[in-house]
Length: 218
Image (cartoon, rainbow, N blue to C red; front, side, top):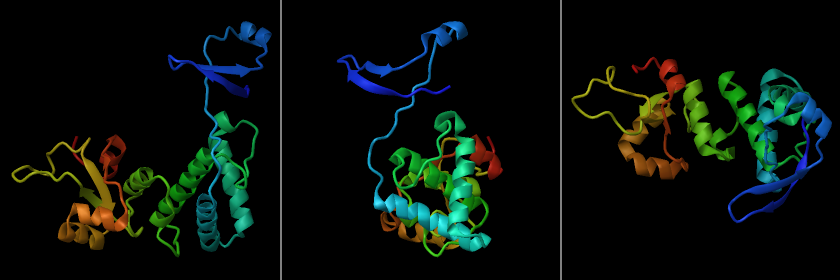
């Protein structure tokens, strides 16, 4: 059961006061002691974010042979099924959904495109709002962060000379996934120039999932 409330006040100590209509008898019956609270983003959705979602939907439609409307509705339902705990019985609309929700839906589309090798007529990086999250998705799916081609792991904080790359500790080190062309380019031009050229925000720390995907030593 999900209930909607409204932020009434934020006190000086940082406590947030929320008013919500709650069936007290039901809470008593279930012996409820704790509740989850999810902030609802009230920022207006930008045209850029909406266009990005439709661009990704269009790429999937061209790849699958389905209409854009079919793809949009199918992915909205799949997304809803994965987030039913927070979306409850609401099928959202791209015309008026909260910004944070559309960003999550955008990530859902990008993950599918990278995982299924869906070709796009545009660099995905140009449409992404959360660069760090996109960088992580590229690492997980072994796709170049810049162009989307098949990629390989590049250590941002390079393993020093004299250390065995196979035996070094990888978890926690920052990394990017880059194709051979862009891997050579970052070595030739330098890290700072490369980041500025492609408007990247650095690498992301290697976690256990990335370590396993690339077969790295603990």
